[in-house]
Length: 313
Image (cartoon, rainbow, N blue to C red; front, top):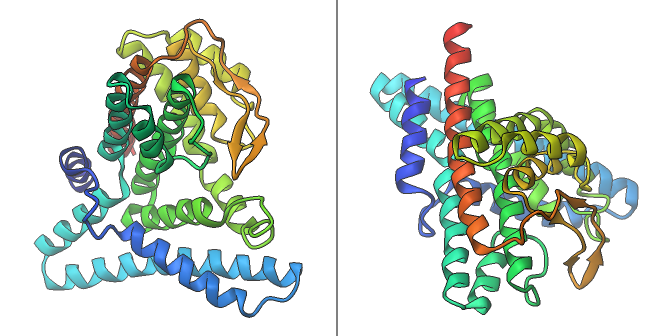
């Protein structure tokens, strides 16, 4: 428990500097290289699906084993080294500070009237096209990604840290990275990315729903509307092509009193998505700041919940 707390604090202090050799970046490079290798061997839809299962399985297993082996080696050297390595990896699987920093960066661009740089910064953290988004569209996209990544980048890693330690948390990060790189339904990945997308759906099923309830509690602590948060989550949680992302988005939309979702452009193609939430307020840059406050409190609630459960068990 001490290591998880220290890793959590380290993430709040340091975040993810761009120059830092983050383990997820190495996972991403491995996925890209291994995918290119496998594509040379596939010649049909069936073989693409098989290659996708191999890509997913090998990436997840290697991510787990590398961390497990490094921890074993460090423990054989000294207990102190083990804790240092363990805390380091815990720090790398969490993304609270990074998520908050990226959202606030876009907020600053918007309040300074620099919409072009706001669109550019947004393009680094979302998959949709950002070139033509207006201020409200940018704000909605930021709030959606803060909501979704509160689950994917904070609550889910903590969930797997408490469940199975750093190796399992890193395996989860590999699953999440696979989904973000190959888990698409476009022509290139409809077959090879199927296994990654399905595994990501399974891995995030519990964390996404846990996140939505924690967001509702966080909305009470931050002076927002927890009753509306729960109501919108229960009503609109399924209003998303993803079986999981809609739940934290709906909970956040209810807390803020804004409407998220709706049509979005991906690769020049408009994708019709259901709306989430009621447009009680016009979404503004200030809602970005409110969403990051909820995100920070949610991350702390997730940590405290995990620690309490570990003590009880």
